[in-house]
Every structure is written in structure tokens, then in C-alpha cells.
Amino acid sequence: GAGVSQSPRYKVAKRGQDVALRCDPISGHVSLFWYQQALGQGPEFLTYFQNEAQLDKSGLPSDRFFAERPEGSVSTLKIQRTQQEDSAVYLCASSLPAAMNTEAFFGQGTRLTVV
Amino acid sequence: AQKITQTQPGMFVQEKEAVTLDCTYDTSDPSYGLFWYKQPSSGEMIFLIYQGSYDQQNATEGRYSLNFQKARKSANLVISASQLGDSAMYFCAMRENQAGTALIFGKGTTLSVSS
Image (spheres, each protein chain N blue to C red):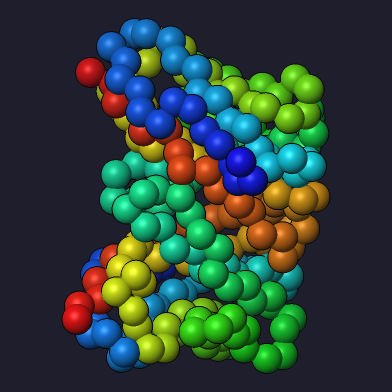
């Protein structure tokens, strides 16, 4: 497909489990972003990659959150020892090299529910 | 302090009418960009329109226009001739030059269009 693809679309995890969320960006997009969107809220920035380099991880809420993009394409967001407050939609976005006016293209998100 | 404020949790409009969604922002960076995204119930964020802080004219994209009042730090989205398919959440977002590439989102406004 031509858009940003995220999998799984839905994930239910028991508290304490580890989860891995996958993002396939648009081919050729060097910039990749992860956002967390709580119910009824706007997306909040988690982390940013340019190619394989993680240039900004200031939004990751704790050291249980880890993201990687080893070959500069597919990215994985991993959450260890999930807690109920991690329940949210996790959005991935990709773009051409990020500049002030660069449009980011978003995937449909992964809805994580921690029970 | 909130960087992006959207004060209207919900807006209701009839088909073919125009509607304005409010957005105010807070930044001391002279260089910034303002974005509006639409999020239907399917979850993906769809880019609508962009306004740069140095742009002299208000941005327009089809039925969407941005009423940019720099001195008041407002960037309201105007949708003309509303359609049933416009029903969705709408988010205002900002990218600051000095803060890097992350988009900062408001909490959103739910727009409901009725026939």
C-alpha cells in the first residue's frame, strides 16, 4: 500500500506483559515519528527518527518505552511491563526530511488496552 | 501552559453551512508552522492545511481556509459548504523551529454535520 501501515490495529495486553508495535512508513520517507493519543485527547509526541538515528526521544514517558528503526525503514515501539496508564492509541507518522512545512502522513494507529 | 488551545469540544453544523473551528497558540519562537488535521472515526490523521508564521496570506485548500491572526496568535480553520463526510475530530498543531520537528497538538474539536 501507499500509506503508513501499523500493526496490529488492536492489542490487548495483561498488565506486566511486554508489547511490540510495528510501523511501516511510506517508502522513501526518512523521518518517522511516534505519538501517543489518550482517549479524547490530542496526540502527544514520543520519539523521532531520521533514517536509523533516533534524534529525539524526549517524549518517551519512562524507560519502559523503547523504539528502534535499525535499517531506517520499519520501526518498532516496545513497551515493557505494561501498565494500565499505557492504554492509548499509538500513532506512527512518516515524512520526507522534516522541515517547518513538511506534511506528516499518519497511520491508522494501534489501540493498546492494558487489562 | 498549553501550547495549542482548542476551546470548542464539540461543534454542530448543518450541511452546506460554513463552520469555524477555533485554535489559539502560544510560542515565543518567531518561526513556526501551524497545521490542521482531521481524524475520522477510522483513526488516521489526515492533513488539511498549513500556515507558516511568515506567510503573508491566509492559506486555502479547497473548502478549507485558515484565518491566521498573528498578533492574536490564532489560527482558526474555516470549512465552507460543510458535508456529511466532514464529521470527525479536528486537531490544530504547531511545529516550532527551535523546538525541532515534533508537532504539538491541541485537544481537538469534534465536528458533527447533519443533513
